[in-house]
Length: 186
Image (cartoon, rainbow, N blue to C red):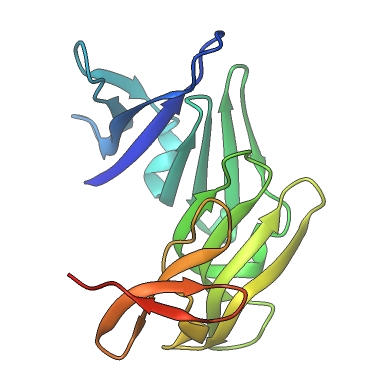
């Protein structure tokens, strides 16, 4: 079960509120989004049946769902699914990637950060990348040959400046501009 956090935006001056959520299959194999509000009962939201064939999911502002398509017709693309009104679109340039291990949407939702394999950089090239869905462009933030991936194979921060990485047997934070590694000590 994947645990994600949902930011719900309401028409007020209050900041967005967050609650844990889980994407799972329901009793009949249908994909469901279950919200676990801090107060009140759990809420199950049925999702499009096609989502059972998708990989990573990122839920933004309680209104938009980003998923990586893993069905053949999706070609590994990242889909944007909006709920009001209900519509689906392919993020331009998201087909530049093969397997995506992590997907992060920026706080302002104007950038998508992915970590995974790049089809456009050549075989075995992986790392962290930025997709601008407005201009339809993508760029490598830090990349290299598998398995090292330039030190950038982990989740990218919502500001696109850092990722979780490793150096030898140590985990830490990698600065995507400089490659500097800061070990996390525990």
